[in-house]
Image 1: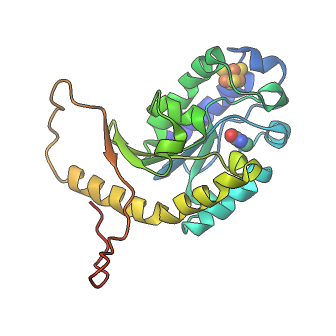
Image 2 (image 1 turned 30 degrees about the horizontal axis):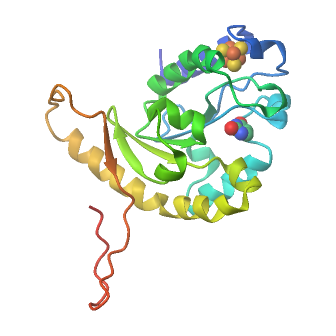
Length: 229
Ligand code: URA
Ligand code: SF4
């Protein structure tokens, strides 16, 4: 099956799914949307009221803000695949529960396998925990890590940034850095692709932290060229 066929098949299963309690309160399930061969996949939390009504991810206020954030990084909404960790709306926009996350994770894993994105941007805590269990978002937001051959960048959730004024400058700054991170990720992947594949040594840490590049400006010297590592 092609990636597109797999995604279509998943969307069809999700539309009828009753694997967790969220099926009984949803209007429409929200499987996700975007190119089947997207280089970048964005994973949010779960549908809100607008998404539940229309069956599409990130189309309300948070979605509008997300489009602005993507534009800041030179990306269009249609360039990326966008989905959520749970495909049906948690009532009242409550947090998804562990059994709901576990049930719906099967779909998310199949979507990731089909799309095979180089870069995954997690939006909010719940999608971040899938890749980095136990980390604190305020410590790691905007930092790129290599996990299972992909690059994962945890970002604050755009809705959280809309509701908590203190987070807004941070999410804007993180998305402003995204073009540089994408460049690093693409370069690293090109290097790996041109090398013979070697197995990881036993006990190797699964996550290699690649800090966000910062301009290196020494106080007493002329500004140097940006250093990425
Ligand atoms: N918030 C999310 O996490 N996902 C959506 O699809 C919309 C809002
Ligand atoms: Fe199925 Fe996911 Fe919807 Fe639960 S949230 S009913 S697992 S599609």
